[in-house]
View 1 (cartoon, helix red, strand yellow):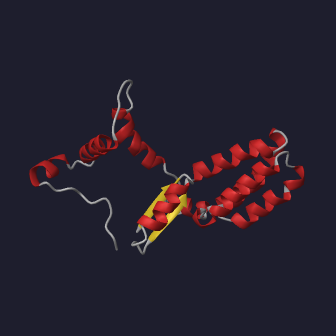
View 2: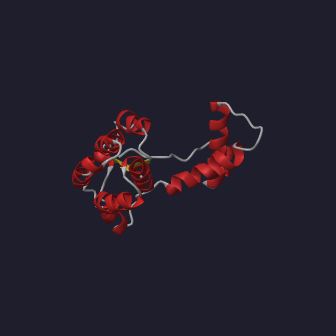
View 3: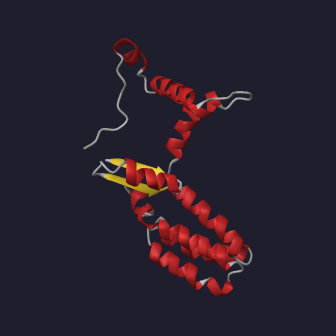
Length: 176
C-alpha cells in the first residue's frame, strides 16, 4: 500500500496518476496543514474582515475535516454575495474541486492513527537535504544533490554498512 501525502501542487497529482499507475493499492492525501493554510490564505483575500473570515472558516473547515467537500463548497458558494473578491473565492472553490478526490475524512483517519499530514516527510527532507545542503555559499547540481541525499538516507536508515559491504540498498517501496 502506498500513501502519498501532498501539499496540493499539480506536479504531485501528476506524479501520483502517472508514475504510480502500476500500484493497485495507492492513495493520495492532501496534507491537512496545507489544506487549512490554503483555505485561510485565500479567505483573507475575499472575506470582508477577520470576523467574517473566522465565521466562514468556522463552517468550512469542520466540513473539510470530515471529508465533506461538497458541503464545504456549498458554504463557500453561499458566501458569494458577501465576497469582496469573487475571483479569489473562485480560486478557493476551484482549488477544492480539483483536489476533491484527495480530501479524505481526516477525522476518521486521525481516530485510526493514519497519516493526515506530511510532517514526517518534511522532517526527513530537513534531515536529509536541508541541514547539509543549504549552507551559505553552497551550490549543488541535481546529480550531486541526489547522490548526497542517497548517502544520508543510508546513514539515517542504518544501512551504511549493508551498502558498502554487500552493495545492497534497502527498497523504498514494495509493489503489491
